[in-house]
Length: 156
Picture 1 (cartoon, rainbow, N blue to C red):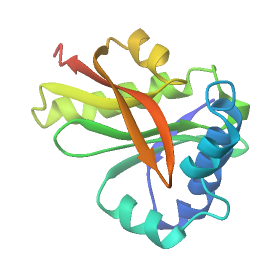
Picture 2: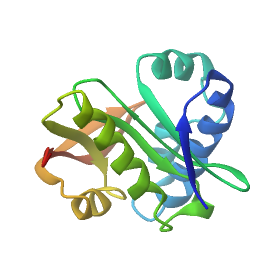
Picture 3: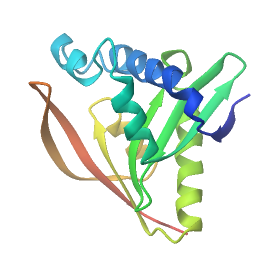
């Protein structure tokens, strides 16, 4: 059973570890070792993560073993982060998190949701009703990545 709850600052190390495992495991079929290392460096910059998370609204999905995913968004409807632990991939965790985020954003009048989806994530976002606006190439720590700017009109 999956439970969704608000993020607490004590979650930071666990969620950063979940992010890192997700990128290096679930992203591996789509990105090379240099790209993965640039996207999710080891060790992570926890101070940078702390600052980033303070600017976002975040929900955490938990099962009996602990956190298994998280979603973080900006108040304008931009989904900044959506990651699941590799052990929880394809179990409906991301779907639940997106629905919870959309419900929360709809409740405050947001009419459009957006995200930048990785090669790994864009098919998932399409199943959630997002469409590709444009492909993008970004550079992080010297590595270039393809991602997709995606958008969804609020049906509420």
